[in-house]
Image (tube, rainbow, N blue to C red; front, side, top):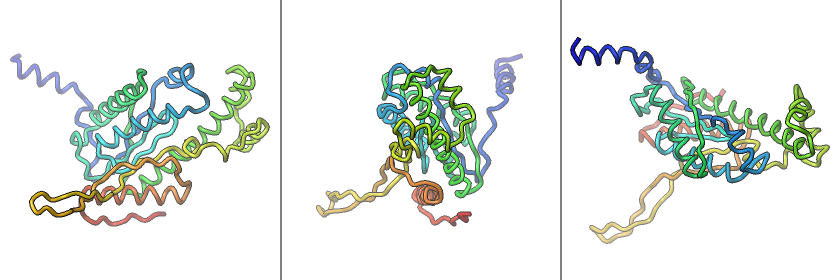
Length: 265
């Protein structure tokens, strides 16, 4: 067997290399921190630390920018970014989208934190902007659920319970029961910072930048895009509407063309 035939036979064993995001589909890449409980437990304040928020936002910003995503959010140790149907990065190849996104988040978090943070990634696929809004609504609901249980767990730990005792006390506890537990310790969950309960959103905004045209020596105004980080997200229907606006506006700004709006319901 000559060298070319041998190389071709080896490439044939890369079984998943040809998998791509279907044409015309929206994709959301979700990156999750690996082993972050152990990474953060001895180094950062619990239940939440603003430094970790900054590091996760830095990683999300990097992923948004590198992939040209139209909307993103982060909560706890996860990051999600939405890619519109016309996105052709890496030829829409799943292997590349997953591996490179995990690498970007790992590198950006590590650079920001000065600690080795590792991420894995997966790809979610939808058929419309409305699907994407549903996805982010789901992740925000998960952020609220996770924040409530995290606050309960660390409240018990700081009150003297062991890890086993705190876990056992919260096993099967309803949302009402968890809120009552916090109330007994003088904590109103509604007063917890918004970014902990709802996550952090990232979306592109246009802004005008004054300048000067050297050819005519006249003042000019250029329209530029910059990434806006939102630590005070709305909830439920208002959040879903915000995501719809962000992804549709973001897509139009990429293509420069009008786009039909998907139904909100």
